[in-house]
Image 1 (cartoon, rainbow, N blue to C red):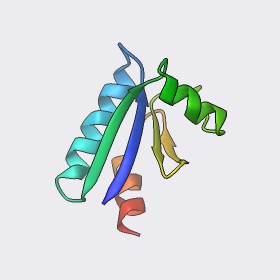
Image 2 (image 1 turned 120 degrees about the horizontal axis):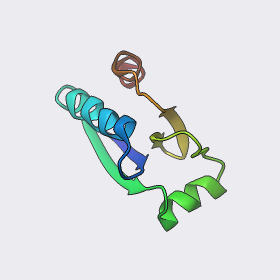
Image 3 (image 1 turned 45 degrees about the horizontal axis):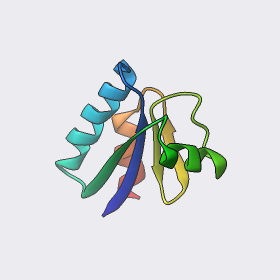
Length: 82
């Protein structure tokens, strides 16, 4: 199971795209995705730990930035298969 945090903002078309990508991948790969707003205390805590939040959305797993901006479904599937 991959436990992911997706940092998003309101009215963000790339954030909506990211959610769609993760929903599709989730049909084949066990994912647990928590969505947090970039203005939240949790997002600020991620930023303080070195996760860059300048380009949203940001996808984080175990304190490591996996992807940001327009998520590539192909790349994420490859990463999750490894």
